[in-house]
Image (cartoon, rainbow, N blue to C red; front, side, top):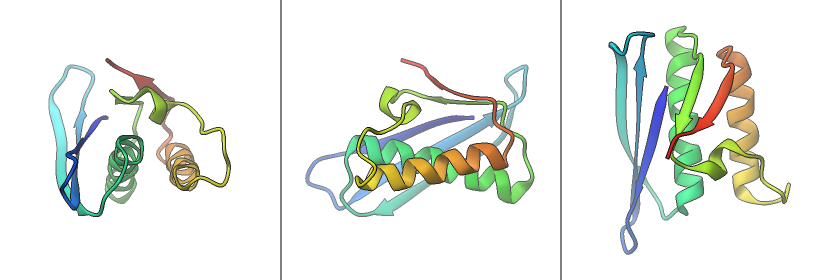
Length: 107
């Protein structure tokens, strides 16, 4: 699963998207969505991953690898009281539910 997020200062929304491919690169599913609100880039990237994993769970798809261009989204937050920590924990739970093996930073 490849995920990405779009954040532009001065707007009241973010864009998120995911693409699911098989082992030879054929697109199996894709989704994009506009989410109202002002979010940091890190939270937007986590919301993109979370949305993709929810779609995979709802469709019964197994996710082998999650790829993101946000290195922070693939690492654990340091402060357990930060908002992104709650989203990160939700993502970790969804990674387990979809049998995902790893989350990789892809520059």
